[in-house]
Image (cartoon, rainbow, N blue to C red; front, side, top):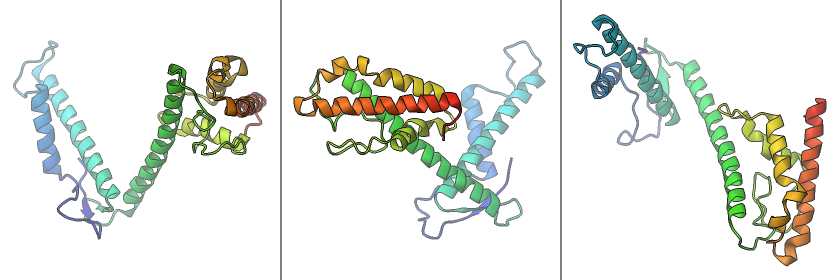
Length: 231
């Protein structure tokens, strides 16, 4: 179990702060958790193993629980502006900075994931509805939704940046080739006939042109992926 202290952030209210868990607090919390899970030192093992094996299994689970609680507490403390100290009471600038950097990465990943999920949600909403749709309501593959009837934002870099940015999220399992291929299937002009039939007349040609622009960009990305010239 790691031991540490933390400097409180200068402007953080003591009444609302999330203080790092102390070792005793984490141990107590995990002991309570263990009891709720039904781990008892004097209980009989259910798998026929020895009582000592069962007890060691419980101790291991509690150590894992304590470590998890401690790490979460550190992260919340640093997120609040605090500075960690090591077991000797010295400022642990290295670990504090590593956590800060990881928090920044997490924030970026959340934003990228949220943008992709919103894009997918707009597609599902469009496909499940029969309501008329205009150019600005169309789920164009861009980081920022269009606000005017203008194709200038549909550039290769803008489309590529949006479609591929979420692939860098650490929990992602989709490859670049898979993302490009699925996008090509989605944006193929032949598959857009039903959607185009619902586009308001004043925007029809503009939407049709936008679809062809996106599809052309995706074809170029696919060619670059195949030839190894992808930037």
